[in-house]
Amino acid sequence: MTLFKIGFLPVTVIDVLDILVVAFIFYELFILMRDTRAFQMLIGLLMLFVASVLAQVLQMEGASWLFSTIQTVWVIAFVILFQPELRRILIHIGQSRIVRLFYRGSESRVIDEIVKGATMLSERGYGGLMVITRDTGIAAIIETGTKIRAEISAPLIVTIFTPRSPLHDGAMIIHDEIVEAAKCILPLSENPDLDPTLGTRHRAALGLSEESDAVIVIVSEETQTISLAVAGILERNITPQVLRKRLGVLLGMKLSQSVKRET
Image (cartoon, rainbow, N blue to C red; front, side, top):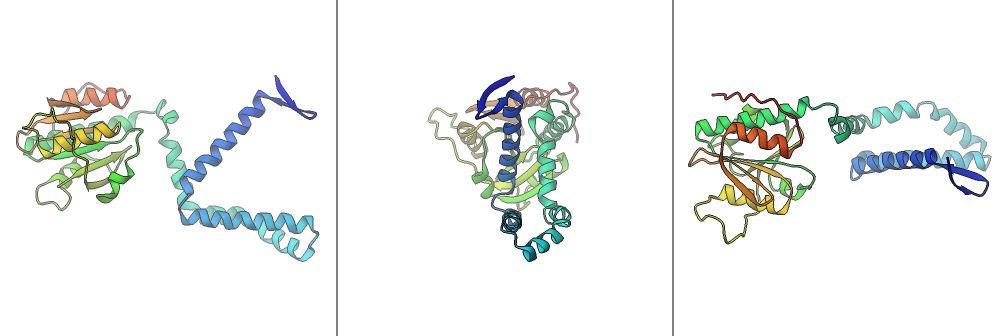
């Protein structure tokens, strides 16, 4: 179906969709590659491509021959030079929300590990503060801590929050299946109506939940109870079963109903 014409060229719905798809792909590539060395190399390759076109237009035979000779290896060179970025792009696609609509297994595993980790911390009397990001970026918070970039697991959670561990004091930041950082500093809530008995962990969790859409799990070292902070609201002394259900709802995932407590 023709929407309108540009001169004698008809523009259809498919043409508009085609342009939007290409624009989206280029935008995602720009977001993923900006501020990286690969982005600078990409600019260099684009300059070589433009120079090749100009050489052909201006009929510069020597330059045209040179560019046509190396053009055959450009694709291989691109794959070699941008291998890390291509891997990041594929991971980014695999973790996109559209893909998650069809595959939820890994996300369910993340919640399993968080619930198990919180349960183990509670049973051992260790304090813990776990921030699960959603849509709001908290890059500034991550910068205050120590970068980890490790796959989440209950043993890793316990190891980080074990007393005398160099990373136990502060918050752990979890994004998708990755523990991005630990020992991060969160803003304290300034709500004057808070229970005066609340400790620093709970006040920090509430502070971040007031400023972002993050979901924060707190394990009290003093009372060995598990709490959840979301949107400035603190749910105190919840069971692992309730934690699992709440995380499932908040993160939009289907979860199994069984809860396994690890010692």
